[in-house]
Image (tube, rainbow, N blue to C red):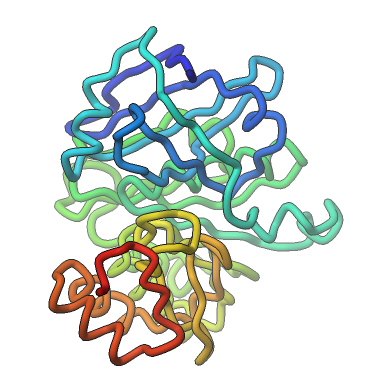
Length: 293
C-alpha cells in the first residue's frame, strides 16, 4: 500500500497528493508518469509526475476530476493509501539527457495550460536546480483555475500568467502571450515545451512552427491504459504510428497529427467507433483493451 502523506484541493476539482512511493521516487525523472489504482478492482489511472523527493521517498501527483475513477480518488484523505502506485513509466524529458553546457546555451520557453501546469513544473524545477532558468507561460480559463503559481514562480526565470477571460495576469490565450513575447518584446527561443489540452498544444505548435521555434509536446492527455496494451493513445507522428504511453509521452509537436488524434479519441469512446478503428487500422490497432471484438 502507498500512503498519502498530504492531500489538498488546489482549486475546483483539481487535487494534489504527496504519496509515499520510495522506489518510484528513487528513479523517476521529469516527464515520466505513474499508474495508480485505489483497490484491486479499481480503474488504472495514468498520471504525470508533478514532483518528487528522493530523500523523503515521495512522489506528488496532480489530477482533475473528470470521471468516476478520479472522483473516487478525490475522496481520499491524508493517511489513506493507494493499492497500486506503479512507475516510473514512459520516457523522461529529452532535456535530462543534455549536458548542462548545452542547456545553458538554450533559451527555453515552457507553455502550460490548465492541469498541464503539473507536468511542466518538474521540468522547470529540474532545469533550475541545474542552473538553467527558463521562461514559463501558465494559462488558465480564469484566475480561480490557476494552479501552482507560487511554486512555478520560485523556479522559473520569468513567469507569465495569462487567463482567457482576463481576470488575472495577461489577457487571452497562451498563444497570444507567445506571439507578444516574440514579436513585440523581442524574445528569442531555441525550444518550446508545451503541455496542456490537445487543442491548446495544436495551436501552440501551429504558431511556433510559423515562428521557427522547435516544439516538444506531451501527449499524456490521451493515455488510458498507460502500458501500450489498449491502443487508445495511438497517434501519428511524422507519418509513423506511435503510442503515447510507451514511445512518449513527449514528441516533436510539429510532427504530431493533432486533428487525427483528437478525432480518433472521440471515435474511440464508443463500441461502434472502436470496431471501425480496428477495421481501418488493421495490424497497428492494438485492441488490448478487450473492447474491440
